[in-house]
Length: 226
Ligand SMILES: Nc1ncnc2c1ncn2[C@@H]1O[C@H](COP(=O)(O)OP(=O)(O)OP(=O)(O)O)[C@@H](O)[C@H]1O
Image (cartoon, rainbow, N blue to C red; front, side):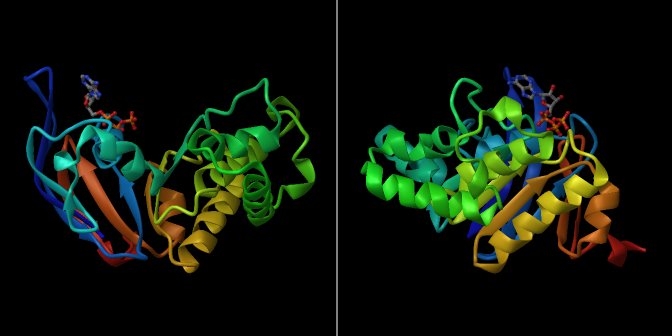
């Protein structure tokens, strides 16, 4: 589903944030992307979202070189991708329902159908009963689950997450990862950038490891390294 071919990214023509990145991810895989701060995790995700363009190489998604997408095709491309951020980027002046409905509203989905999909997404993250709450009234873990509901409300084929457990304690982090595993079980391809090595080690998924912009490891699970 995803193929990086010798991808490099330079910012400002000088600094090389990523160099010669080469890997493939099959449809339905769940993969962690790890590495120290500044290793290039967010840059790699931004390339995949087509928020940045590679300086070298090609990125193929579902067989298409995403650098060749016409600007009018980019919104359609991005709609197939759900994105979860560390700080979840919820709108604090709107209730939970409105936050999750936002991507559907932007696409002009008919309100009745949108409401059905929002409730299905809230149900999946276990927060259907909080649809009228404001984000401020929720705990950090609940806010992150709302961020995930918003990311999956479109039923994306690909779900990307950038440090989704960054602000959460170990128990809540494990709960959030279980939620990603649930979405993976129903066929969603998932890529999660995280530097929480202890958490990653407990889950047995493939791990892509970056160091200073280079891919230095690609293991089926951290345990297999030892
Ligand atoms: N827009 C940009 N312009 C210039 N340099 C950038 C830009 N975005 C990232 N960088 C640099 O590229 C390198 C990789 O950054 P990136 O954010 O991808 O790393 P990361 O692994 O996600 O780190 P963190 O875990 O701290 O978010 C860093 O040195 C960063 O300063």
